[in-house]
Image (cartoon, rainbow, N blue to C red; front, top):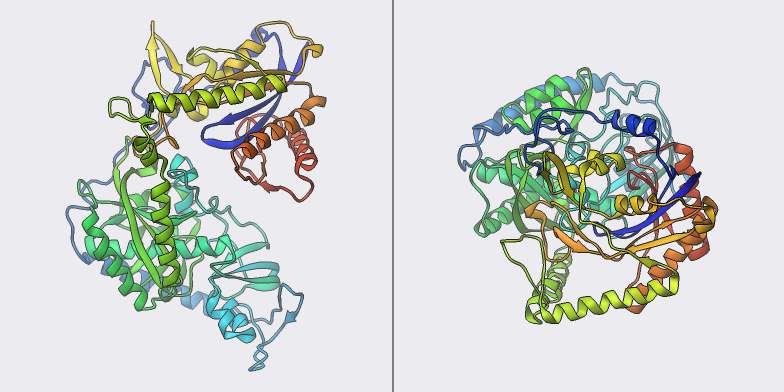
Length: 635
């Protein structure tokens, strides 16, 4: 008898998410299903994943690149190396060609619609009509108020249509951001020390729609809505501001040390730039000269210039930087185009947009440094990462520094030592030792959760810590997460420490013939989980290799999903209220790498949305498009 399964789980690295996975599952799986599942696995030779060790030749493999490419592109610290000037000359030669191309575009009249509905067709001060390929968002803002034009970081442009001679592909807009997608498989792109990036990598543009647009970049069509975004009022503006600041940091690193730059994205609270320095590394002594060099760059008010380049031109520009070359070779189609941005003598692969000039950055601080790996793979080249923070006002930096001091005083790692709650040891990295005082608190929390389990109809179970890897292939976790699992051989078969409880609970559910009358079944498990996190990402109790959680899975009929999700949300609220914690709700929907049929996803998302409407009311939550787990949507 087929049953419907809905799983709600709380995972350590998806903090406070309620995950609902809806799938049609037969209680007894026949041999044909088993063989067809196995047939989906792709067997490849070579190392698998950035943490894995080489196993037997007959083990399932995933293809991964592990070649070190840095070589001798960096030998030693050299200020203003000659390749900076050579790159600049190549840029200027390409820029001449682009200028000739753009001069041929006809300047046709366009209109611009403001958020209040006003439609502008000309500069109300000079009478000059707005024209495609000429009028920029800055020009429009200046006709309203010079203060608005100067305060805006970036524009958000919703096009009604493009002019007939505009081509997305010719403008480098029909491909995704080459630098951001270079890190799409790196866990540190999704979460860096618990601090998420400000947004996902921008998708490829295909039609007239809404785009973030440089304030000084000419418009290319009629505008249905033009918004001017300020640093203090919009998260997109912060992302652009910090991305521009990352470019300034990169320019300083090239000037001072001749670093070979790789990637430099914005974060939710700042930015970083990774650079290749062979066996060299940053120290605290480097902070002051970096800050002084960035201050010089800001004082020069260097313009951010956008330029479209072909794949061949991009390879010429970044000749000698194997990291940029690899991005260009793997991310840009042979006949495709992409974009670069220049400020001063820095030229970098970038989709943009950026602030109008470096003078917008009034305050900058180098905050910390660490090592990292190219594309997040420990078999690849070691890189040096420098973090930074910046603001459009020096007072904001002072406020930020004060907040950092307060946060340091509240740091759980500091309090844990002072109050003798926990300790860590190099012989078991990322695994907390709970001291007697800490264990009392730990056990009290478990008893608190158990009291809720009894009230809400959960049954506590205990499941194994080690499973044959065949289970993780069947569940799909091996395909997506094997590089984050501790794997080893037992009697010539591959086993792994469990990184999550889901498949084990499914085995327990499938261990008996079930009737629809048995449902819902609510399994709760405090089982120990292990994840092979990168050593550089480990941080106190917020990023660990060994942990336990109040984890649960609910098996229910499709008509019970809404009630069960509502119950799980209520459970969450009661626990949060007990500890005085606030929360916001978001429904994360079907990602690109999703398992299962779309109509099943649609049903699951609708059920979760209905439960959230009941729990928080319409408008009490938002949608996170494409951010669901590979097996189901999540809250």
